[in-house]
Amino acid sequence: MANPAYVIDYLANNLVGAEAKYRVIRNRFVVGFLFWTGVRVNEILKTERKDLDLIIRTYNVPTLKQRKVAYRPIPLDHVPLKELKLWNEYLSKSPFDNLVQLSDREVERVVKAVLGSEYTPHMLRHALGLWLYEYSKDVRLVAQILRHTNIANTLIYTRLSMDAIREKLRLE
Image 1 (cartoon, one colour):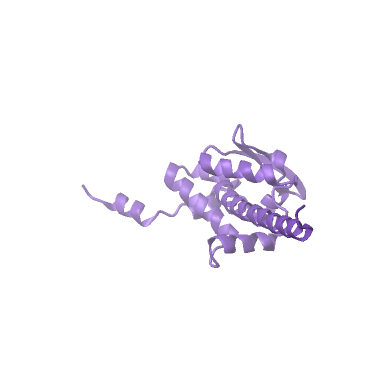
Image 2: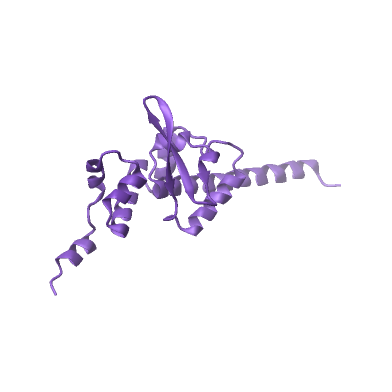
């Protein structure tokens, strides 16, 4: 018969390892989700599992409108398959209905832990806006994905990269 102390120690170490692995997947999910969807922190905290459909690649973003939660669907066709597989892995391991069981400050800590101390969750939203604009050159698309009601707000996200500026200025 095995030593009970050894079995308890083994189970405790494996459970801690499983919890640590879950945290790594959760942290990676949070950062990827913030980037690829462009959600604000309060939106990811309100998101439930039923709001995200990975099969048809749609996300119903919960937003506060006049103190009521309204849903605005966005497509997830721009999200790479590898990222969607990671989201599916996270969702299959998470016992909760809410996507993340974190506070807004904890989400900020997760972003800083994964990307570095100079990054904030809102910077990921800006990064997606810039990426979408460079990819599509369509301000209306960026406004739709980022859920801006005023297109003037979207113009902040349309800065060109140095390569794009050089390409536009290149005389041939």
